[in-house]
Amino acid sequence: MSLKGLYAITDEKLTPDDTVAAKVQTALQEGVKILQYRNKTDSDDEVEEICIQLQALCKLYGATFIIDDRPHLAQKINADGLHIGKDDMSIQEARVIFPEGIIGVSCYGSVRKALEAQNEGADYVAFGSFFHSPTKPHSGIVSMSVIAKAKEALSIPVCAIGGINVTNIHEISAHAPDMISVVSAVFEGDIKRNIVQLTQGIKVSQ
Image (cartoon, rainbow, N blue to C red):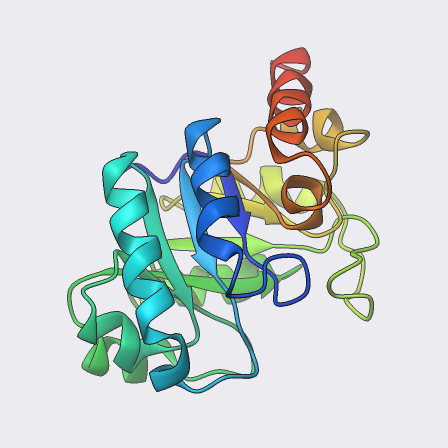
């Protein structure tokens, strides 16, 4: 499974569960390669059905489906992957519950943390925020130089995340992360137009 390209993350406000499948389908049709379902509020039982739908959509469009911080659910529905952050469990704990799939880890601005994650079996690492993030307003801002440092130090894919939109994606893309992760820049407004513009921004810097 390829961990490259535009990586869209759902959001409880922008993609509530009653509209998320339709919005995700549009995003996948337009070329999103990786999708993460993020919902910090509801129980696994409450979101299981929607995750099954999203996994099926990703399979249909040849995309990778990742669930944020729900290892038991990821294992139960055979999701492609799981993402964990600093306040979630360790990789070892996650791997016991979710033995086969992809595990991604948030490393913020720390290459040292990313190296530790790689050594513990992470399949990719994410760095950010690189800009002010409307969905995570309290995230610290990370220097873009961390991407090059990470790519030099690591053998696993690197993801850039945090406040990336149509006006700045070319700046991030110039540093050549394997994945560029977006939330509101995809799902706020016209999804089709957003993805066309984001993709153009990636191409400009390559």
